[in-house]
Image: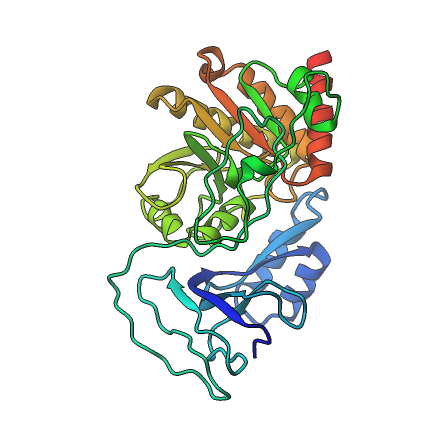
Length: 363
């Protein structure tokens, strides 16, 4: 039951699988209580893992469900302007609310929503020949650190709640010494940019997305966010991938979609099944980023956008950035005038990466 006046509803068909972070003791307890034939062998394999592997990933079976993204005309009773609910049941909202505009991000929309007037809304058939549309809520303006060179895709005109990003940026004098300007003079190496920004709002020739190349559907946090924002576009890109993708390998995929990028570089750096120590994890980053940069040099991609390739919880951001920095300095795009944009959405993480960059430059 929705308590606000519904202004717009979009639907997304999601095919997801849950991944849980579990300690070795928790995994061992689960295996000991399991009656599967392979439980004993799995338990023996668990006990042979190095002591440094204190946490493992528990991956559940894939499930399919429909999500409803609801925007309110104002706020609901919980002071929310937007909410997301599982759309397995009809949506109900107050009598007299204006009929919402409807969009679907699935290829075969399954339901629509109308004012219920106290009753459940009925399912309505809709044509599968519909234009593509994004199913994203208005995102807040990110604090970019270089307003003159760091641009982002224009906001959807239908989302009137968001203002033009250019009008909300701060203007900084040349001698400004704030956090966002310090790196412009002292932390931006040749063609290397550090941004306190959402990488999905950064203009570039190609976007780097990390995945687990062993199976379709295992992806990093940025890839998950991309899939939620542009589900059809992500499906078009991922459908061209041929699995398995060897660990430490990048693959270029091109597609004409409604997202801001026409090229995605999928980099296989995540490892849910393999057991690696920190040295091996850094080597995976080296191989993966080197592979992506080689592809960029061969195919004429001048600007790449990414985040610190830390593999979820596997590495800390400064450690991952240190390895990326070393590979970038030795890469062909660096020597030929290309640009690598490294974005950090979390302010604390951004500060630690800037500090690591300064340390690297000083040494």
